[in-house]
Length: 289
Image 1 (cartoon, rainbow, N blue to C red):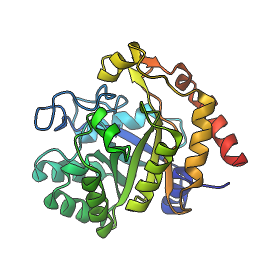
Image 2: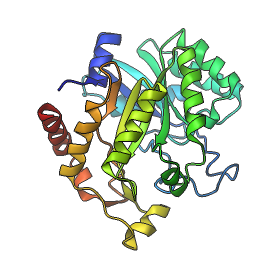
Image 3: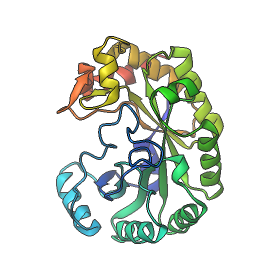
Image 4: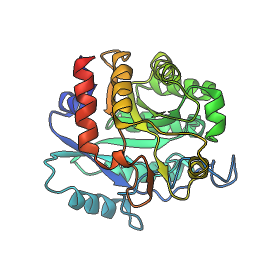
């Protein structure tokens, strides 16, 4: 079975190998600052972006990030705002930030991780304007299509909000990427695959699959320590990802087959530390599905 990988997509779109440069906008999240909640999603240790170089202006961050990935063979780059909610700021702030990020000639696209409830009309119009200059990707952390699970992880937005945001992004021809977590407590294989189908039916252009990671300092770590749920084995995860890939239309881009949590604070599962082995097993399962 063949799937449309992000590597293939970049070759087709940009004509070369492309590498993402992690940047830190210095934002927080409405699910953390008290607007919606103060706990954040219960699996989140800090919104991702652990490779970003913080405390510098965007130009300096880009150069530092390029130095960090030097030798990996990239010819062009994507400016990637990953940590927390990267549209959670006044539109004037976002305009200056994103315009600076796409300024260099070797930056071919802008990638923004955010929440579907943080995409106002003004923000969408800004992204649409930038998208006419260089391609924009918007990543939305759906994680699950099941409201019971969404409540448990303290997601704090509805499926309807997600669908509306995807529709608005598609109207503006902005590439939407949906994050999905496999292994949330209480979810069966059928539940997880139905979340994948929900994202596809909602119109997402791409997907990122993640195994649930238990990290120090997160609320879900307490439930895991109390024995309230168990985690999938590497083999079970690989088989499930292969089944998920099988339900994707050929034009949906697979941006990620598995994620790797910060090893410094990872509690479980231990097998995610060997990403190469995990990817090899997933690809083998996909070939055999």
